[in-house]
Amino acid sequence: MPVILRKIKIGLLDFQDDIVQSIEIMRTGGLILYPTDTIWGIGCDATNAEAVQRIYSIKKRPESKSMIVLLAHERDILKYTSQTDLQIFSFLKTVQKPTTVIYEGAVGLATNLLPTDGTIAIRLVKEDFCRHLIKRFRKPVVSTSANISGNPSPRYFEEIDESIKEKMDYVVKWRQEEKTIHEPSAIVKWGKSGVAEFIRK
Image (cartoon, rainbow, N blue to C red):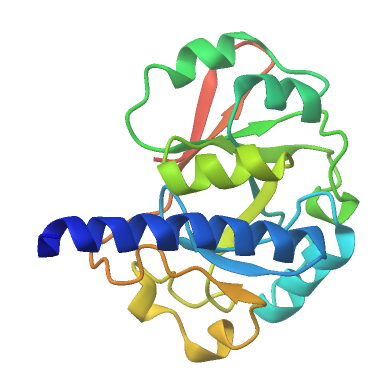
């Protein structure tokens, strides 16, 4: 078998194994370190309050700073929010950069993920690993930068501090060798008037 094809085959096996292992860990309330459609993130079952609390503790992040949730389908947004303006889906089709939207009326998620106003930040992902992971897990997954709160966000795997890696229950192998520099997503608050207010571009 040619070297290139062998590497592709091994890579695909790692991809599938990472998804299986990640799902098993999250189903038991564990934490994963994984590549997202933006930067590497710490993830867990977004409906599990104890797992969410572990992330806050590891990052030394106050609970007043809520975290992002990743979903794979538009219909899932309707499942986890109660006041969704359907115009948001047309808007998302016009953006090129990964974009996180702050929705009102969050439901069915861990309460310690939500700020006092009951909103939730959600991003629909297109990146292959995240989409496969979320679709097979069948639940929303937390995504927060793999750093101590206040420190710079790692742009690729090698920049993640060892103290973070050591506290994870599973570290995804997929894309560890990648050196492409990624940036955090844009963040938009979707107002009741149907207008997008950019918080971070």
